[in-house]
Length: 309
Ligand code: BDR
Ligand code: CA
Image 1 (cartoon, protein in one colour):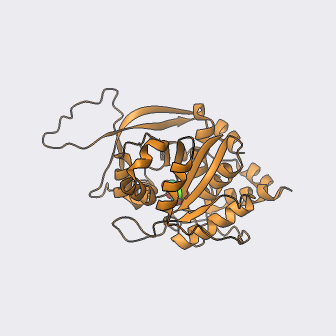
Image 2 (cartoon, helix red, strand yellow):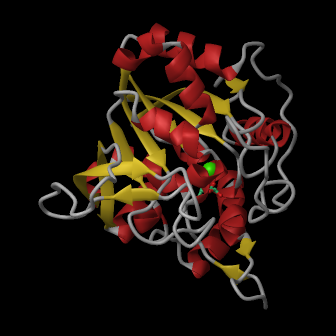
Image 3 (spheres, helix red, strand yellow):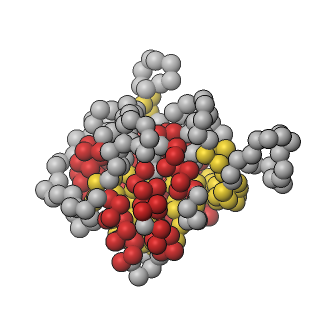
């Protein structure tokens, strides 16, 4: 199995991602680090412990990290409800979080792994940026960073910025600049991978306790953009990034120059140079730093959903 560590802000779809990482035979979940994002850090930790308990994986260590982005104040999103799990009630977990801060936890877990670790960032990248700046010796022990974040097209936090990158753009810029090979599972594919409503409903009312949790999480309604009734989305969200590790051929990727914009309205946008021949820009006196990133642009959604299910 592929050794992975998840960095999460649980979160309905982080919960789905944790369940895949905890239960898929192709993955060895070494640990989970938590960061403020969808909800406050304390809530993220509590939700993460509960989800792992529901998956029967109380052996997986969980560490708490950053309470807020590097520069800006904390600002929790509301799309996952006030509890972050869309009101899906899970039993409390009997166990405690690790005594170490997530940055120290990540350092020691990565260095202790005999094989290089795949780091899976499903949240604002504050913990990862702090790790890479504080302990650059881990860079060579990270196989690659698979991150849910960014977009080569549409945004969600703003018209052009995706939530995880927008929440802590400086962190994302530091991480891209770190030398760790990066794979971007952005909104271009994230928005396309969903479980059909009747299938989610069957899971929610079935006999398997874990299936019921998955069905309820998928059935969580999101507010429609312009008011009105909340809508079923069925999106597997962050879980798709985990599934992409198991079945990389389900996605079409290109190695493309990426830059995190830090200023103005476009703050938090990932600029992706989609030109077939990126070259010198016809703009005098303006230049940006580009990092080559493997960007997922297309996905065989039914195939990735099968991996998830
Ligand atoms: C990302 O933001 C969060 O709400 C989700 O958990 C996902 O990681 C999508 O933009
Ligand atoms: Ca997330």
